[in-house]
Length: 597
Image 1 (cartoon, rainbow, N blue to C red):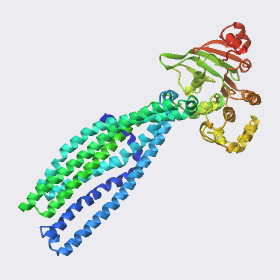
Image 2 (cartoon, rainbow, N blue to C red; image 1 turned 45 degrees about the horizontal axis):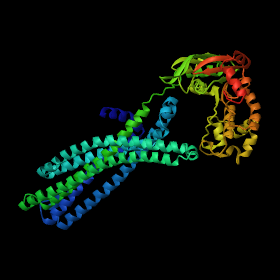
Image 3 (cartoon, rainbow, N blue to C red; image 1 turned 90 degrees about the horizontal axis):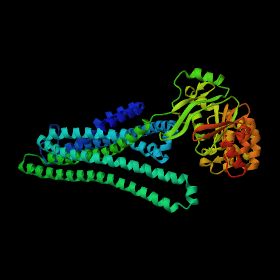
Image 4 (tube, one colour; image 1 turned 180 degrees about the vertical axis):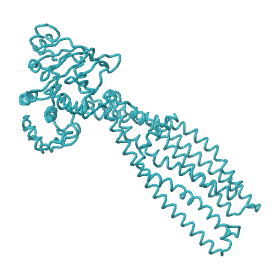
């Protein structure tokens, strides 16, 4: 575990490259800060020695009591001011480095997460992923910021204080340092258990966020089926598990703090008892004893802070582990790594026909559940294909494979004779336009949702919408293209969302058009209005349409009938009806109003 932690921390350490100067300044300030703190008990002890007429520094012995005290107070004030100024400057730089680190890691995590294939996201709840992008990254910043730098500062402080005590009185100093050994061993023992508890806390927090996010996304179903009580009880159980996990790390954290506090009090009592006996015996001055009492208190302060920082670091290392697991997740859908300029040029010239070929394609989400089996077919340029079949026959999966959202385990898919793996993803997805039945809209305005990655002007957008017969729709919106849409377009109807998705594809003028029941949520009048424009959109384009209505299917050039991931029939409507197979049965049932494709 320790080696893996080191490897992950070292890999994440590259995010600090841009903050080298700040880090050097932070490290450089450690020694003067520790010296300024260590000299203060010594100055207090010297002041008491001067007042008592005991032996003090030689340069103080030559001065009068008033002058010596004045100088010591001035030096003490200067050390306090210097320490406060350096601490403030150092803290500012530490926090700046921590925030810069957080921003860079979160940016890369987000980029990596959205490039992972749908296969990964199918198994990873959104709430768990959000926890890694938010609270785990915040915890990680403490490792590189206040945690790691603070540990260095505390270690340097311990070394400076230890050397100072040994120089003043090596016997008493050695006694104080010996007490640190069992304290350190006990703290390390507790830290190992804290680490395991902290990982459990992170996992339970992920479950809590996932549960909360799922209920919010499905709020309509929750309320409609009166699931508030049942879901609240389930959420409460998740909350109890999280609370119990947090209680365990609170126990270890408080145990460490209480143990150090008791030991520090015992050590101060020991110094007072032993030092008092030495002062009474005349072997030690009262000023020296006072300095040692202050040092014994300060000796445990960095140790107490070390324990707290180790707690931060343990939490951070847990975050490193969880973030590392995400970053180490392989990106399944890799972009083309060859000569992109030549391929891009080729895709713009030769890949303009729109021919689609599936060659012996097989695919499964799970090894024990084959979705598509040895599927082969060819769609000629400009041909309109209807894809039909029972639920679960693999129609939607076929679309995902063509768009390279998943990779087939066997076979290959070609566009105009080129394997889609050899086409840059940006070029591939520019050629393919997809209108899904379930339209996703981002929060923002209508224009931004239509434009997405293109740089088209609002005027051109308005013209395209009017050409598609969407002028009436835009007029219904209070601010036209500037109308604000809420999350997932919840403030407009399903039919209106579907109209916007059609316009979004039309703007890009793709060569291959995929439609998954694009008019499913439209009323008859809107569908009739849009159908004419859809026909124009389909002209001179290869089209693959998943259809459930007989009228849409009959007009297709060819119909592919799928069942359990296999192509069992193909041909036009009349041919398939005359064959009397699965398509003929489905068509007959739909004519009777008993079923749909």
